[in-house]
Image 1 (cartoon, rainbow, N blue to C red):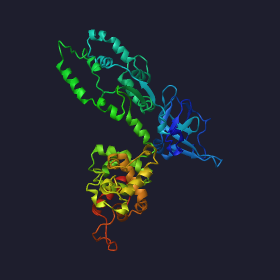
Image 2 (tube, helix red, strand yellow):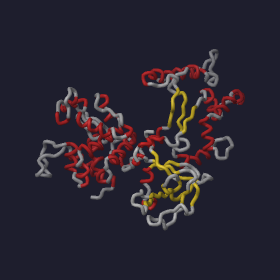
Image 3 (tube, helix red, strand yellow):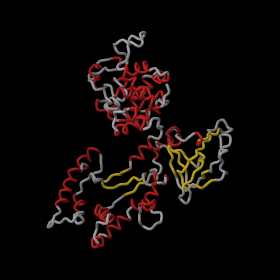
Image 4 (cartoon, rainbow, N blue to C red):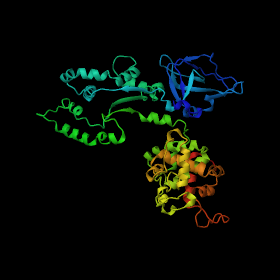
Length: 479
């Protein structure tokens, strides 16, 4: 119900409906002569959710916007989609999608379109028997003994979904060739048919002595003839399990049963309104000393901030990332390393309570500092649906989210750049490193030998200049 009230700008998924038509490409198509429903094409054989970021990334030749004769109507949009959709025979097709209800519909990721919910009650004993049989680790006698459990596992709801999607010849066997074929089909591989399953089952982190003991026979363990390795393994597993210890405190189900989902597809879907303005390779080439896991941690958050705050030209991005690189030691730090005591009692920062200096010390990739700036940042970020309940001002622990949460660290820095210091995009457009650095870092005490008319300069201009030159080179900004 909440998602249905979101504005059109939040409807970042285009759903192409099964049964609609994909119009075959013609060289003559243009804004004046767009594809028509009467043109030849193929019937689409599957539903598919396409992120707006994918559509935005299409070349100009694959996008047409045709304004209707009625000036009060919305423009008609057409998208040329190659090899993402299939026909009724599950064969790949290419052509033009006409964005028009009911052939296509717009959705917010928060509508959870395409997700299925499955209860999985498969016992561990059956799962292990199935696994050992698949590896051909059971003797003929063992296979006969456990065949009922193997069959029960094979016909569970999760594996049945695999068979429905992957076992194309319906012979009851999943082969490596069928898996490869499925992964080559976007309508199956793009988190649509398999990645959007949400399954309820007992967590691996929940210790259930009885269920683990059920595996004793398969692990060839008896009280008379114990398997010492298995005994120690169960002890290790018990030590690792944490569910029971935190269930009541965290509001988790005491039975250990919970809903599980594949996070990668979900996260990328929720980020679809953030166009990729800087790639992983580009970010790594700018932040040379940052390890790969750090680049991956900040890649989507930085891109979201770039899009959200219109830091969206190569020159603006170069200035933003060069300042971020300098201030964070190339993404090593997201919090001011020195004590915040020097900010204590500063009325210009809104620090009007004891401890505010340390509590609201500089945090984020570009450091938001002071109670007043934290409060303003909180108010702005609360306009984003996922941060409607954000609190970064009530305590030090809450304030630390600006450094601990990569998404907040990046968004707060975009807010600092475009809202707290609104001239930063303007001076970036003018390619004025001096004033960009002044707005980011303030004045220093030393004289500036290169600009006699400017008696002071920001700290560490040499390194800021080096970072900017590197960023420009990576992003292809011409001198």
